[in-house]
Length: 270
Image 1 (cartoon, rainbow, N blue to C red):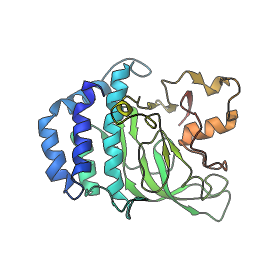
Image 2 (tube, helix red, strand yellow):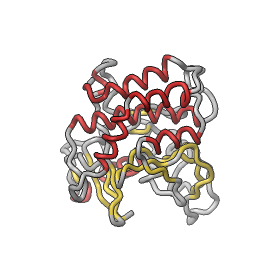
Image 3 (cartoon, rainbow, N blue to C red):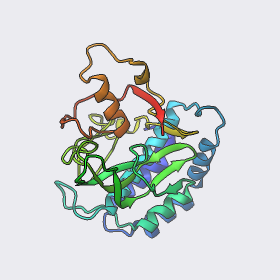
Image 4 (cartoon, helix red, strand yellow):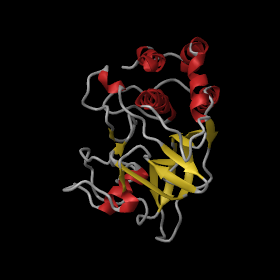
């Protein structure tokens, strides 16, 4: 663990060590008072002026990842029901408290009006009758969080969609990559398989929305728009695009948790 991650690590531990606490008044508000520098750092990071996006040291990406672990943990409490295989239902936090915490840290809180895999994560899926139907958002569990033009956390939503775009049992159940924890589906990220201390040194995935273009995983080495892939790779180009853009398969019938999509980036119209 890097020293810059310590405030977030402490908050994460407090949430887990006090599972029955009212998280916002008992844990988050005192944490905000104790560590005002975290909101200041996030504001400064979002204001960096480099274009098309700011340079980031690996310690910056570790710090963002630590913050994302906390917010993903808090989101567990916004979906009903227990986590498998445990009976913990997640932290005791309301949607308004989740939003208030994000705003206090300087995030822009958005509820997307239309579905896009850039800013909407499928938390539940209902089949649409017509193949030509557009994807419709039916209900949101938590909002999308933006830090300037950078995506910090996608909105979690139940959607209705035709199978040609989002297949039931895949888009809502396939392993979700670049994710730390979810209540209803398996997750995969680069922190898995490390010790409790070393796992914190995981880089945050950076996606940006700038001037009508979305940029996925900007720190990765291989640009899929150029058809660049490592030799003997275990996915074809179309599958790599699918999993990069959606962070999981959404139509490809695969439940594998052992793929390696982390080295790819892609820019495309929003």
